[in-house]
Image (cartoon, rainbow, N blue to C red; front, side):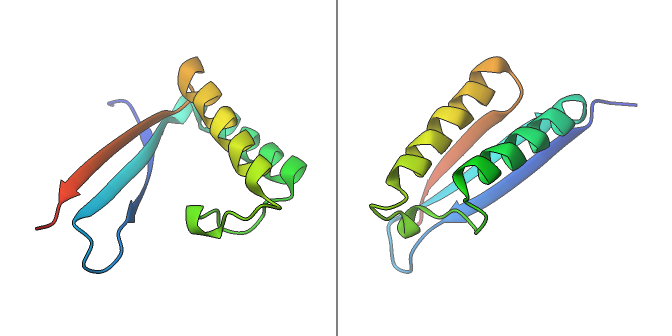
Length: 91
């Protein structure tokens, strides 16, 4: 059997914008439990239980979003998760 990966993707685009961004986070099945636990602990510590969206960033939550970026890049650098993005010209 081949390697099993967990892939989470989302797109970001407003109507009539020139570009669409499609991004994804990938983690292996063997790293998934640690990945999931890390995300759960982060959300609990920061009290960020709702869907995280960049357009929802407020002054009151700016530090939490910055911490999320640091947290995510630590996961990425440690090899527990990988981020890929594709930018598409829609015109």
